[in-house]
Length: 388
Ligand code: NZQ
Ligand code: ZN
Image 1 (cartoon, protein in one colour):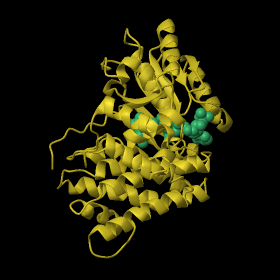
Image 2 (cartoon, helix red, strand yellow; image 1 turned 180 degrees about the horizontal axis):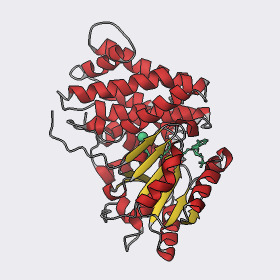
Image 3 (cartoon, rainbow, N blue to C red; image 1 turned 180 degrees about the vertical axis):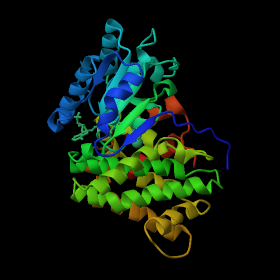
Image 4 (cartoon, protein in one colour; image 1 turned 90 degrees about the horizontal axis):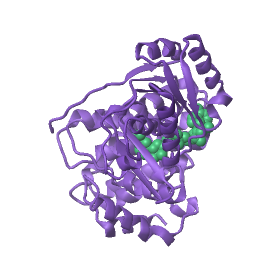
């Protein structure tokens, strides 16, 4: 097991009615003049927006708003948020929504205390060293952004979608009420489940061995999604299903599942190129890329790892080897199909016309990718071609 540092800076308030802590937590964290960020309609439709505003007024907390943050949040929204923060001496950001709203808010928080353009963080020209404090009220289980330091931002001018790492912008607290996810549509519920599973795969498949405890946590999260994903899909108001998925999403990418091991992240980097150009939902892109990545990297030496998932998560039987590994990958793909996710690019109306461009962008920015098995441009091309 590799040495590691794990620190959980974010206080989590989990469960039905936990919005009750919002006012006091904002006060405790010194929020006096906040930027409230959200997406399009969902929080107004659900009544969450009204609840938050009522609490802010009750606590005499002044607020400005940035609304309309898109899925696959754009750098233009980040810049708009920074402008509001700088012009109005904002001292705290409250993100109410899903991963895109939270990611955009983290980038705003970092960019507000930086003199240059926030895209500098994405292209590595600058590193976020300080940020306004951020808190979240999560409305969709998927990214883990509510308890991590990542933010993924899209630049429409350059057709790039790149991650920003801002430890300084990790949320100070997040409120996770599973009832807020009752209204998440089937498609987004499914995409969220795929995203959570993909985060686990990116950390589970590793050249490091002996982090047994971490791998068992990974398998537990996968089993949770396999058990409760279809339940939440069919019964959107099933609290137990929504609650288990929500917590699985948070644990899935809060650092716990990479303790003691190297990670992969090739499928995510490839998916980001697809959604950068086609504005595809992240989880849907992963449902297409992940099984293709698995089939591409599978070999005799690493097949046991795929077999473990087949046996421990999907209950397959048989001797370890390529055959069982392939059956495990088939099971994963079948599960995505059961949630009505696309598993080929053509199902998302994407053809081969820009595949070369995607592979070249990865190559020029990152060189070889993947910790489990290193992939060069030809590997990326082969994976994308196999998804057509
Ligand atoms: O805009 P509104 O009206 O709020 O609607 C949203 C949006 O259309 C809707 N929604 C959210 N909560 C809802 C709801 N609709 C009904 N009821 C609710 N309770 O869902 C749609 C998708 O929202 P989005 O924020 O895009 O979803 P998600 O949480 O999946 O976030 C995806 C983004 O996060 C990035 C992805 O690349 C993508 O840009 N990621 C961020 C990561 C991180 N920060 O660590 C890691 C991930 O791997 C991922 O890359
Ligand atoms: Zn993801």
